Length: 186
Image (cartoon, rainbow, N blue to C red; front, side, top):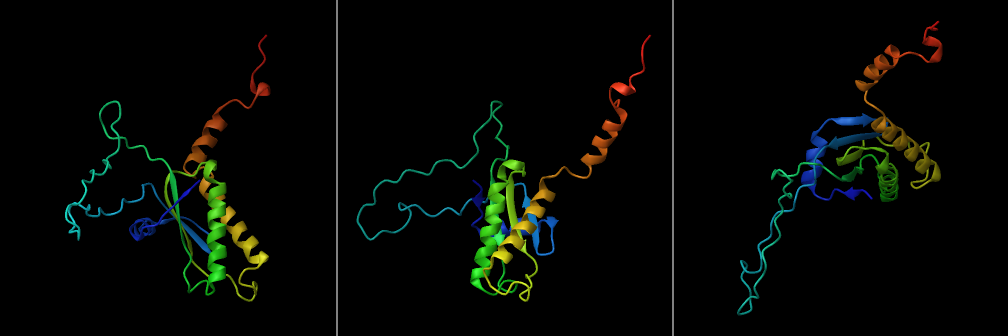
């Protein structure tokens, strides 16, 4: 299951990065990081209470990453978090905004195991769907169109990078083509 981004600071960090993939209606942003931790709230021992003696409160568990075998902090990033940005100016009705957010979450939940890199992901609606083509705010046609476009975006994200493709092609070209390429020995 993919987590959700809930803090506005995380949205700002991810949207500050350039988009990884775009389609006619959506843009996908990625940041290889974990969600930020919430600000520390004062414990009840520090706050003024209306009662006489406050009970002793244990200090919170360290939020530092566990040390690895060489006593260095673990830096391996695990997990994926998803945020959806569907502005009112592109989807006026709340039914439409909810439908698009559900489709975004469904597509990314389904492809989590397909090799998306770990980190923070934000999918942003960048232009409205044509209201003349999709008359109903929550039509099956709109659902299908949004899902198909999101699946194409995810396919762009999960395929190998362009830099790796020429290198793989060069290795394949230098290898023998098969048994017919081997000269007969005699």
